[in-house]
Length: 78
Image (cartoon, rainbow, N blue to C red; front, side):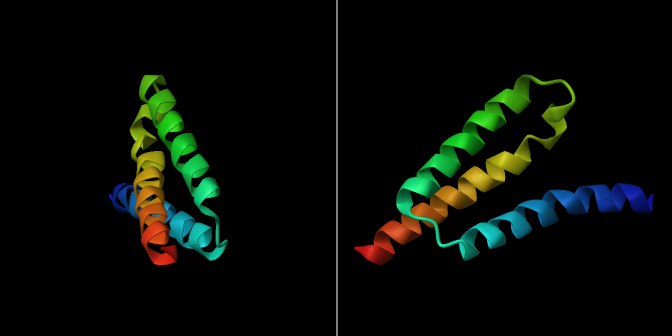
């Protein structure tokens, strides 16, 4: 039962830590766009893979947060 609770916690913890580390790298707008494209393409590939289908929201979260960060950077630098 505890393992099931921890399993759902990874879905929140992994993207949160990943986006925190990516935000510390101070990426340019082009690099953020490339990251979003890679995350979206990996989401599509994971959709069709039988075992990876369960983890599909991880790259989707990175794509969403990366897109929001790129938009925020665009308004910040303007």
